[in-house]
Length: 183
Image 1 (cartoon, rainbow, N blue to C red):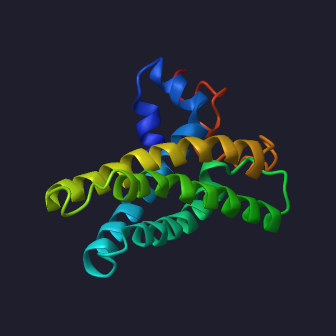
Image 2 (image 1 turned 45 degrees about the vertical axis):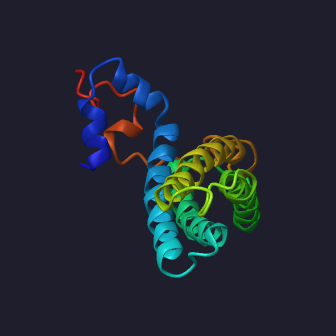
């Protein structure tokens, strides 16, 4: 039994039903959380060690790496039953949507640095770091995440139940009362 299945099966009602109803969104959020960690680690590493004078470039590189991981995890887990497009077309749309997402993600950092001038010498080094983190890793990611959720369902993986669901876990069978421990 997987960790996710254990968590879902232990949730009290009505949370269990809500989690099952919105499983795609929850999986998307878990993939997003994983990619957030990847993105943050790469962004902070590059910004600190290699690209200290080019934080927007560091953010774009970090987001590109996280996007590649995101495609694999979203296609094979979050949206595993969705499809409706040829694989090459789906991948092209995914990366086009994420190109827009990268721009949306980087825009708050660009505004923070180059419009509001939240950088040294206008603010302290700590103030600059906080402004970079909040604008890039919180505001930017939230804007891009909302756009991606909508765009993935609208264009990249448009047809629900396109690929057959492999029922291997109890939570993949929401109508099976016995599988959910409610016999």
